[in-house]
Length: 245
Image (cartoon, rainbow, N blue to C red; front, side, top):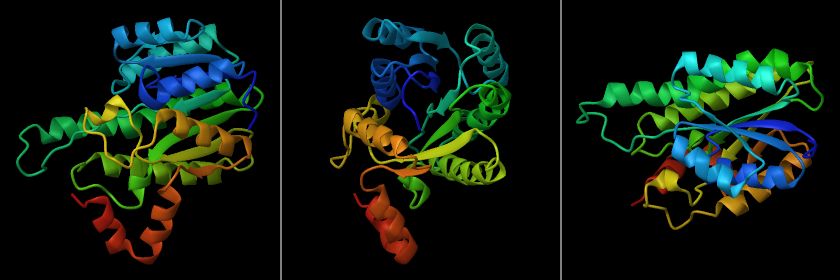
């Protein structure tokens, strides 16, 4: 994949991996658009990267997905790359959490339905432009789920499956379907409880972009490759290792 002269939309681009992607891709000569729910975080992102274009958007709502697409299509018809990065997580106990269903709906809408909806909306636009791609950010937890994330794992596993099927269906289409399976990354997403094995956003993005340039379409970051192999050979051990305290 060519990483220069693109117009790239990154969802969840105001912090963490999305923000780091915006910084690096902008520095490489791309026009970068980011969306996020927090207007304050978006403003901070623009202060850090003056060239970036920002869109406030709650991707859990279909009306706001549609509005995002319309604004991008009208103002940046040259958009050729969509990075579905936005995600939310609830660390909770399924049985005891009284708000479990509401939390599940929010995670399913943001983590799974939003990438599906945006892919459907943007596909005709991307097809018109050179070097088109949809990049879905998932996680190594699709291979061995973390028990404290009762819904998050499932949404990412679903997105993993969707990415594989969409890639197969579009194999004769110019739009490349790429999946990036992230390892644990030191971002605000962890709410201050960052696991010791976490790598920096800079390391994660550097590896992701290097493998994108090589043309890989299913990219496993850092130790996710080892987890993938272990889950195939010894799935119970993989699950135990992910959930050790």
